[in-house]
Length: 141
Length: 441
Image (tube, rainbow over all chains, first blue to last red; front, top):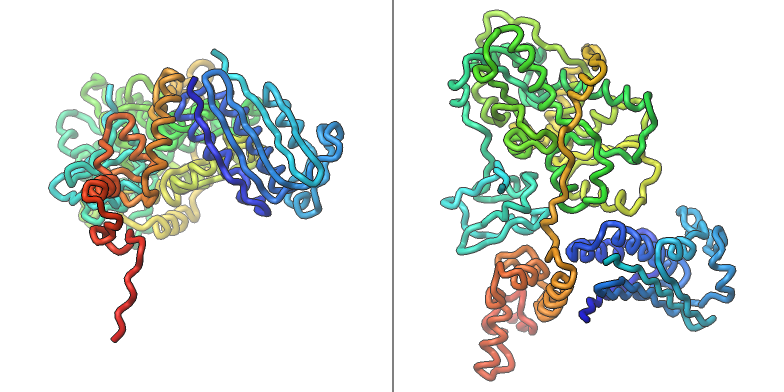
């Protein structure tokens, strides 16, 4: 089965530029003619993931795989890791610093939103090593 | 049916310089055989290529005034952007009266229809809070085509209304039929428009199944004909029947201003519009109620058919508005008559950018495009005639170009045949890997 792989570096420290990767991915997904709803969910997940990586991990890499029946998005960083995943998944919980909060980020909705808009989500994390958040979005046949 | 665009290429003037291919927001132009060609499915009539062409080879043509001869009674529908084109004009009625000297029998201002649309919109706002947010203005046909092509998800956000010039055409025709008693085919209604996009829209409406205009003339063409009659009017009849709100539609922000209490964002310039639509698509501007989007800088006063620069035209319009009433027209239709301002067809998605309707085929094309693109230089030099290496890769895979159209690909092949490692000698300086030492004097 054919798989499209798209890789986007996410620059750390620049909240203003965050969203670049999701815009670029969206353009490709549109060209593939995927359903609007799938594109919307994928780009929301990607955008939230990008913001997370910029705020918490000084950037990282976004990898996307598009297959016939699903889109897999991996947000990979080598940041501080998440000590308590269950807590991090709670709506409204955030460890974002004051700079990010002043800019209107850090509402504690990043991971919960990624979960809400995807069909499957897994978090692999190790404190001090980094985090990989993987979301899958099914493409209705 | 292919769209009848009003942007056309004069191939005698075109020298294939590739200036236009990069400014096109929908990547609709390719250079082939030393001439630019427009992919009609992709053109949104924004006029960017017309503005940038150094040889004035890309043009837009309004209809010829000769068509007036085909009708017994002709109504001019001037867009308010026309008023801002004249030096030292202090009375809009001079322009409107002069229109009656160049072949028109009656004037019906588009600004008047715009004012009714504004009133209709205000009535809608107070009747029920918007079901979709933000609502997107339906007043720029280029933006509508852009949304249909690139932002289909947002089609549901677009206001249900027709263009001001279309409403003006419907009302002007009714009035003319009543006043003259002539059969409909003897009456012609013609818009005087600031841009190529509205000429196309007059031929093929975005919102109406049947066109309501008999033609559209470029402000530029009408402007020259008006100058002399404007100087030699015996008397100036009061024709002006629009106020500040209606005339305000000529510049970006005018339509928003008429919505009074709403939070509106007014965006001008096609690239700014694209960026804004991307943000809206991702839900990143939740606080906005209304988006006014104009493809041209400063709105219609910046259209490619105007004479004056957009900023000067805007300033003049502002001074012409001074002392005018805020609004002179209400939207007073009742019951089903209210539908007169509504589209009678839905916006249709134009899947122009989709690689293939079949997902499997699209995936395999995308794979081949990425593979080819990874071997291209990424300089976007335009020598292949496509705006970027990515667009070129797409062209090759979709059968619109051959891999050998890339000068770097050909050079690579020549090098492998000649067995040489370095072929910098064949390349112009910007592309040489090794820079020659500057010669010392």
